[in-house]
Length: 578
Ligand SMILES: Nc1ncnc2c1ncn2[C@@H]1O[C@H](COP(=O)(O)OP(=O)(O)OP(=O)(O)O)[C@@H](O)[C@H]1O
Image 1: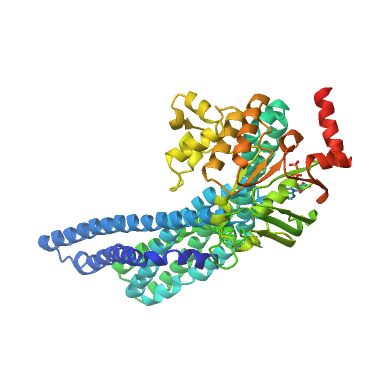
Image 2 (image 1 turned 135 degrees about the vertical axis):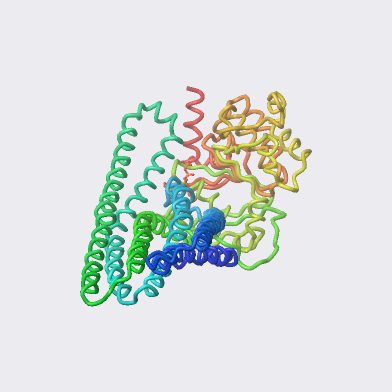
């Protein structure tokens, strides 16, 4: 199945493939023809002492010319096969990458990043091996074997038939090897995946690791995984060493014994031509050589098949990001948001939101508060349609969320998270994200609106300053300001600020607060905040507790109610005062 699917990737290249195959075929025929020629020469010229210098020279010239031609054809076909292989891998990587982008966040929740990276890089690389080395070699050697068999039949059909005993034995050898090595390779690839995952997590969390002096523990974990991978590799090598070379050598001896027996039997009963004998031994040697080559490619083949299985699993993944329902071109132009009895559970099945209902009028600001894990961010994730509600309905402008295109949702709902992600590139491209409809002036306007413009202008290259490594040279507050500017450049209708001011110092926060008043103008705004000061002036505050809205109202009404919100407010004020 997997092999067939891999072969299907060759289809678009069938013309080049056919041409390369013809070149390979001709070269192989020449290679096979040469010993036949020598055999003919021995029996018709050498032994009968038919020695004419002109004919000898002609024979040498033809022989040499054929050798050169075959080398040239082999070179040409190799280049073509390589090109096909590289193109296939290029296509496969693009397919995997775009598939990854279509997958739902629920899939990413379950799958470690390291394992995805292994599939996109290591596994496709291993499949490349299959096309470059294994398939080309399999094809070439198979032609060679068929050609040699034809040669053997021309020389002596009886002997040729005897040598056929080799093939069922050889098939059994390959089948046994595949059975033994497959689970080893599967475990090996999954260990490699774990290694990459561990490495990825370690590199990402380096500062935490150093702060908590976790180096030794993580070193031990890594050493353990590496050791397991090493042992599996050795196990694979042992299987190769035991089953491949010695087994083929054994087969060779077996065939030799059969041939010698046959040779002895023929010697008794009939006359043997020396030329035929030379040709036969030469050709049988030539059958063995490609068989050996096929065998040495087996481990690579097996590894590639296991890798292909993993890549295809990813390509066949059906856990896609939610798609648009129908193809209406409805737009978000007011910012009316309604949740109707929305309940939601992540893939572990635990209810995180329980019958949440609220309605936010266009232009209103709503504050979401509640203890850690109460479900505030989950509300936002559902609003952005990263996940689908388990039950209930979310409406935008009075229409089901699912009927809006992804493009509309991503451009009209602006999100600023606590940890802003910056990309490699200039400040300008980090704000405008190379969006064709965003002009330079809009980028500057957005930066000015969120008070980021002064610090950007202080950078050595201003808006053209290149940001590297996720912006490690900028402070958290500066990164956050860029994230604000990026969101505002798109002029969203709905704004979502998820703990967006958590990293900002009080002075910058003051600036941000002023900016936020401007940002909130004419747009519906959701603010998730632990610091209640950020949402004091919100039109509506929703207080969440274990996935349920337990209180709602303005700051004033909630304080007067004397419930959870009032307690939180008192505590925060107490901390400030104390
Ligand atoms: N991707 C996920 N997969 C499974 N469970 C999740 C996922 N994200 C969040 N949760 C769980 O859902 C619950 C609500 O999480 P959520 O992030 O919405 O809370 P929150 O109120 O925003 O918390 P915080 O104030 O700490 O950010 C938590 O119990 C959390 O463990």
